[in-house]
Amino acid sequence: MSDTENRVQVAEERLDKVQALLDEVRKVLGVAEKAEAAAERARADVLKVNFVVLGTVAIVAVLVVLFRRGR
Image (tube, rainbow, N blue to C red; front, side):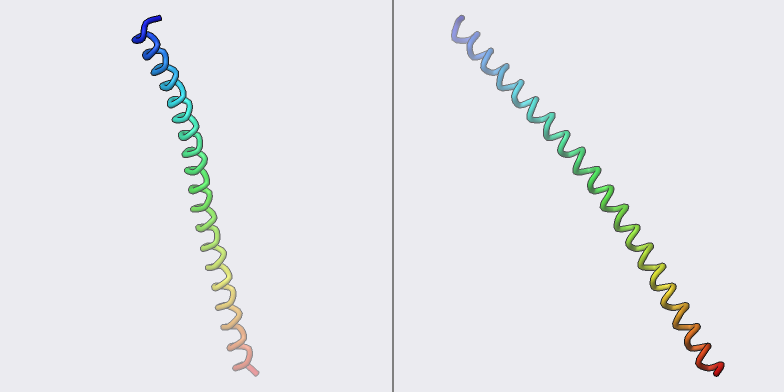
């Protein structure tokens, strides 16, 4: 093999390694995007629960006030 052929072969091997690493990076980014979407859904669920709890507390507070006035 000539020097040029050796260099081409080495360059092709390195390119294969870089492409394999790029594929791994794409997989990791895909997982990260899924995790981010799950975190957003969790935040939305927490907000919903907070509003339900606050609404329940407000209703109970109103009932307590009305009950005390009625006595």
